[in-house]
Every structure is written in C-alpha cells, then in structure tokens.
Length: 107
Image (cartoon, rainbow, N blue to C red; front, side, top):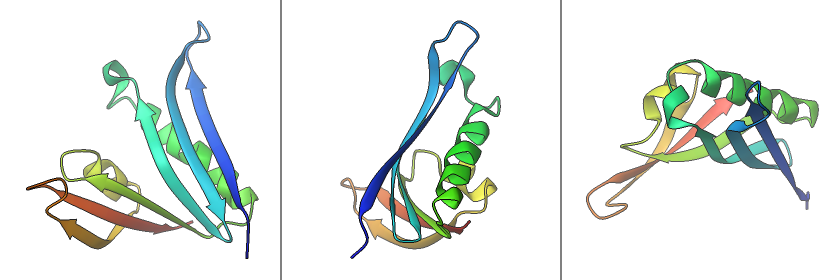
C-alpha cells in the first residue's frame, strides 16, 4: 500500500502575506486536492489558476497522473471545468438540497 503524503502550496503578495493556499495529499499516482483557497478580493485575477498549476506541477514531480477533488454546486465548479476537470459522479442532497461534485483530471 502506498503512503499518503501531504502536499501544500501557497502564493504570497509583495508584502509576504498569504493570498492563496492549497492543501492536498498524494497517494500512489493520484493527487487528492482537499482545499484550494483564494482571497475573495483576488478571485477572477488568475491567482487560483497560478495556485492550481503550482500544486499540480508539484504532484507531477511525485509521479501523479490524476487529480481528484470535490466541490459543492455553489462553489468553484466553473473554475475547475475551465482547467480540464470532469465530473465523475454527483452526490445529490448534500448538504440538504445541494449537490457535491467529485471531479477528476488527467495530469
């Protein structure tokens, strides 16, 4: 059994403040992306794209070939679709009337 290894990335501004961060794990040849966060005032300015590229690149260096993540229907689905993620399955009724989307991308 392969070990799950933590992986994280961050982006700082010119003052050294963290403006975006990601937390993930690698497991075999998979990247399991748990959290990708961008400061609200910087959304839509390619900071998320930079961060996603940074963590995917680090995962590729570990031999990862695929990435799995989940997001809710009111969160970042369009962002992930734009970056090549495809919905593999949907958990309806989570939470309550919403949906949780599990998305995969070939790295």
